[in-house]
Amino acid sequence: MNVKKFMPNGVEDVHFNEFQQKEDMIQKIQKLFKSFGYRQILTPTFEYYDLFYGIQGTVDLDNMIKIIDENGKILVLRPDVTTPIARMVATNYHSYTGYLKFSYVTNIFRMNHGRADIKKEFTQAGVEYLGNNKVEADGEIIALAIKSLLSCGVKNFKLDVGQINFFKGLLKEFSLAPFEEKNIRNLIERKNLPELKKVLEKIKGKQKLKDAILSIPYLYGCPKEVLKSAEKYIFNEQMEEALKNISEICYVLTDYGYKNYIDLDLGLVNRLDYYTGIVFQGYLLNYGKEILSGGRYDHLTQQYGYERPATGFGLNIDELLKAIHKDESVPNYKCCSDYLIIYPSEYRKRGLYLADRLREKRFIVETDVYTQKILSMIEDIQYKNIKKIIQIKEDNEIEIYSLNTKKIEKTTIEKLLN
Image (cartoon, rainbow, N blue to C red; front, side, top):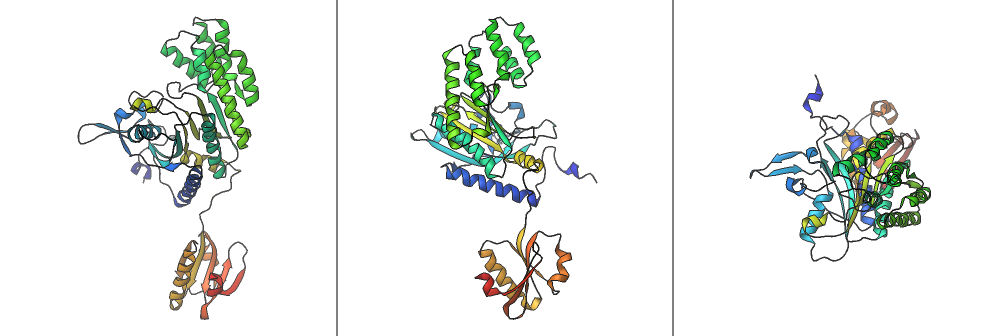
């Protein structure tokens, strides 16, 4: 029987070991977000299609999963969280003048157009920081992205950090049609230099400006070296301010102690219509897919009638799990119960009492009726993920067998609970 035929393309079951690892990861990230003052919110699973229509640089409209409601309106399953949060802020926080710091962990839904390597549904965790346009806010967001990966036990990763206004300023020196700009952006992001050179040969403009565009894919690596190389390509105030901004953010990240986790990449240029300043993407080494992304987007809430500067990032939890499973430097995750309590039926009450008391102490405890001695039953339970086996004996005595040390400890219920 072909079991796959019972599951749509782009979705998958999550089994207990992976589910527990995912839950533990989410709890660590939620705790981290909360420690920075981000308050968790939840937007609806369904949004109006019109909410996203006309918003450039977010999710492609063709990638949204659409349905029709009872009134004939087009709805979409949540394809993005940032845009709904912008809608929520614009409609509910007009009178609030302070900073707004939101966090979320929720499922995202997108079409995968038949691609088996892209999921239709995945879990994303992220934060949005609204109302603060200082470099400290951008630095905090990037530091929080780094801390999120570190909290999950990941060490072999890098964040590529760019500044969208450097390229926007350079484009001001040309008179390009929108399709020409888009083509150049795509070639820069793909670092397709031969094709980029051919395109630029057909465009009117000074050679030094064309040389600047050709140099952008090379403006990648150590922040100090990239900033020094980029200075000779400054042609206007916007480009100068962009380099100053990213330089100051690098200082902030240095003070966090995270300079070794970032590279500068001034070739991150493919979402000019959405981002308005700093942009960044996170990757695990030897894993080609993007794990997280974010940046500053100061004009999004304005499109819903209430302008607030904003910055944030989103972390793809499911993609991170896949990357971790391929990273040999991260220990294998094993979902274990702390105790298995076994007892003959006449000692059931005693065994269940002990199990409840241990659960109150936040241990994971399983129980079973078993009449044999511990050593004679080890082979039967090795398929289980159990750390210790407790056998209930006479007069409240117990024997504890550790599967790690292979030793038996004799004690009493009272002593164990104390």
